Image (cartoon, rainbow, N blue to C red; front, side, top):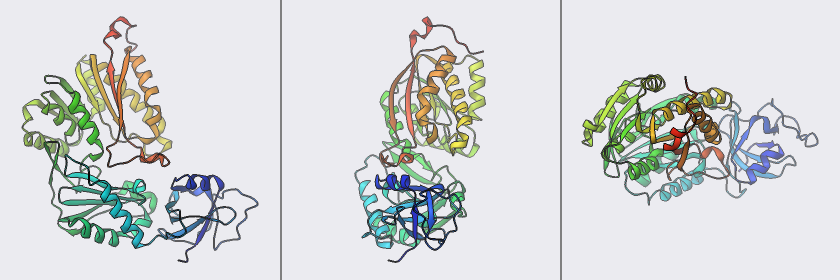
Length: 420
């Protein structure tokens, strides 16, 4: 297979050979077809004339011209190269995509207790830019890279052949495709996908809106959190579920006998959460509030309200590094309020999907606890559900982490709160 060649800087070569799969624009050396490779300089060039189109498969070489990998290239994206194969004998073609699709689906076959799961998780399944979620007998896919865009037909045919779904919906939203120079797409690609899909998980049922819901309609990655919560929630507990979306965490708590207040900003999601509560026969244990959780938490703090549990599952607080400072401030604010609203020995469950903040959470929590004047235990920590695997050498595949904090009853013997 004859493909264009692009040389990359030494640090990018090292990462690729250690199984990372992203190369950034400032790590490119002069591409094939422009000027001769200047290996003596060895410096990455921030501006190059590309000889490729978005989505082209290219051969990645080191500064000396030796083969490193095959990758999807995109001259308009911050992620200039997405590695697909590191073997010269394994070119990127329809056969490779279909084989990896088959392997990804097979890996999820043993997942029990639910008919909703993630079948393909992008780079974690060596299919960069492809997400496929299953909801009962329907599939929802997202294409996030220009390279994978070219294999849409092969992907749809492979899914139909292997799973025979009643329908396949594409939910390639703007936020994922803008940097790739691709337009947003919401379109049924095969069969029929209803406006509501009924799924089951561990004996509970939930309606999913695949056309308009967040992500692809349901927080599949929070399955582990729901199962952990089920194991520790006690009947009669008073629970605050902030950022409740369609109510899955609150409903799990209510199913264990807790009394729950769910706060969600978007009215359509509140209504769907009400329906989910009725579906599971727990509507009398749930109160729903349509409002901004940040402001609502502020108001309840000033009222000195207290709960046994405070559940925080905020949306991504930053999409990129430039937003880290504001995201950090937002998380600090949330945790100060959460610790204030938790009773002595009360618990705060934080689930965070802001990748750039994950390594800062414990520091932020310490500062927030200090501001509230309470001693805090860390009782547990876990990652996203197992069908969203974390690849050690691809850090962004670990994007969701949950912490279970507890406000230590001994806080009462410690210095008073600095909160005003």
